[in-house]
Amino acid sequence: MSKETVAGKQVTLHFDGAKCIHSRQCVLGRPDVFVPNVQGEWIHPDNATPEEIAALALACPSGAIAYERTDGGANEAAPHVNVARLRENGPIAIQADLNLPGQPKSFRATLCRCGASKNKPYCDASHTAAGFKASGEPDTQDSTPLASRNGELTISCAKNGPLLVNGPLEICTGTGRTINRVTKTALCRCGQSANKPYCDGTHSKVGFTAD
Image (cartoon, rainbow, N blue to C red; front, side):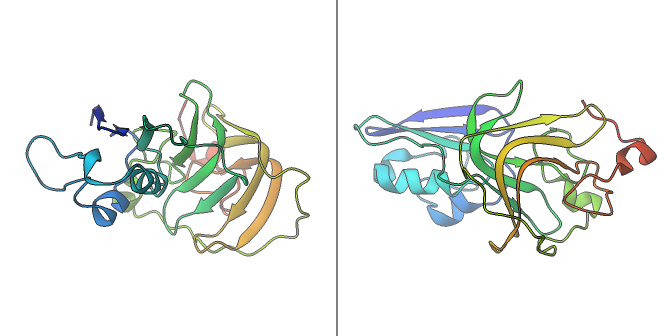
């Protein structure tokens, strides 16, 4: 899907179909703003207030929806806490001051951890067809509170290997329980680590290939 930009009277909406994981927060939350199953124009920012548009965009875990307020209101800002949420049998949803080398700056992204996405490092929902299995509720590990819980988080992709994380990050279950606090770690993206969500070197054994 292509990128779309729709300017309303007080806010402009941006939609990046390449990042969309079809969580359906938009069409379920405000089907009058994001109108499903229609031909032609389907994004209508003037059907909600700027505050409602902002809340709708922020509910999108992938960052496919972004907004720019033209009414003088505040645009999206970096979160107070950098968080990675593990989706059951699915991707890692990141909310942070995110720096993905080669990608535009963002505050939200949903990253593949099944190894099957055709749009790496982003999830494209291939985990469903691939039958990917990974708990969204792994055991809690001993960790100490971070000295700083926000700031830039750099995530780079090791060639044929894991996601390399540098910066403060709280790793949480899908229901919000903190399972670890890190400033540096390697997260599995081949889908076959026995220590998910962390890399255990299995990518080398299974011949995982990805830039």
